[in-house]
Image 1 (tube, rainbow, N blue to C red):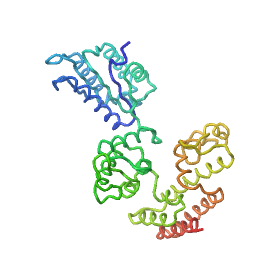
Image 2: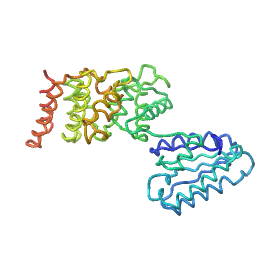
Image 3: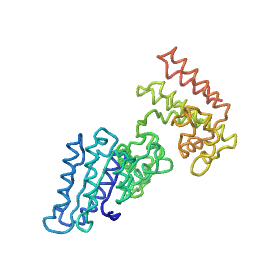
Length: 378
């Protein structure tokens, strides 16, 4: 069996994160080679079994080739996609070729050749990825569907690289508006850092220097588009904060850019539906607010999950127990949580607003403005 340092294996479902980490590791490894000629990158992307065989053969030749001027050689098998749950990845011929690749990796001498393998996407249930995870210097590069910890760390690291930091609530706002798109998050962070460094920026302190630039939540709200799927963040955030002027202004911005009322109603209803469940569980003492989100959720799930029937294992706003505890805490703790009666009234008003839009399809903004006033003016 190889030593843990015999080769490096970086894998995940997000190809951008995998490649970003891979580039960093390869640059560090190739830097030790000294001459700049001892590194080689092999393209591991394969559309069929024949290309899998060709990539593995090129990799074998690369690790067996001695550097021109001696010293240690660095080889990067990059963009491997034949470890996925795909027709190519499942093919018997591919599985046989992976056994050959395992033999090559087992025979490596890390003193002579540094090897890096990056793969995305990866079916981690299969034997070869499992073997790599157990026998390599392994890193899982994944964003996580619910935001996880990788994405906040990613944008904070990118901000530091730009000489900036995020102010209170700015990271959460950015993640909510962009969603789990690592590439777009990085580009938005660069844009925000550049904007925040300008004297005209509301968050740029007087005499700001590199390292003192602060990206504020207001910068994110003004400059970052709401591209997260089914998440019309500002209108929903404004409404559930209880701030009527902000809600009306958010609706004006939404419709000014040609937006439609139905996705706004869907976003409001999804959040209201979750808050109804959270409010009920809080009132019953089954869960409680904590510093890291909603506490006691697993215990409450064991008690009440069977009541959800076919929705018990489905991640949706119909099932509060399918949600991330931190996310629920943010929803409930961002402002004073409405009473159960208010949330039920919201649900009725949302139904009435939808029915009104069916009758008045050309007056969607007016219908939602009236809805907001009825719910928040009191």
